[in-house]
Image (cartoon, rainbow, N blue to C red; front, side, top):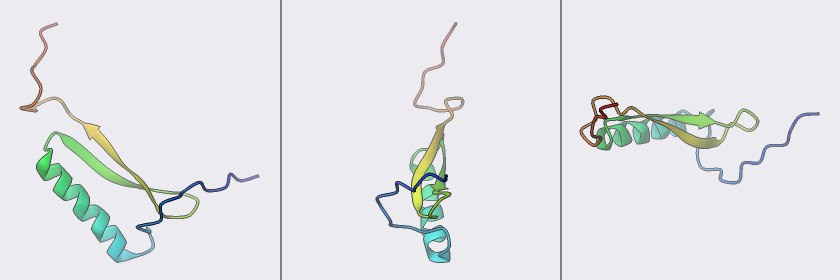
Length: 70
């Protein structure tokens, strides 16, 4: 039996090109503000609505993080 989707916020959908563009624009703006972040939208596999943004922080080369001397 397949799990029922638990998405509660239905704002952007992966089948709508304008929604995909808005999600990508948000990611670009985020990466401009936070150059040490990689960000991408994660779409629900069940219903296609935007589930979350996955942010990966790259500390190497970041001016915000002091290098450690281990």
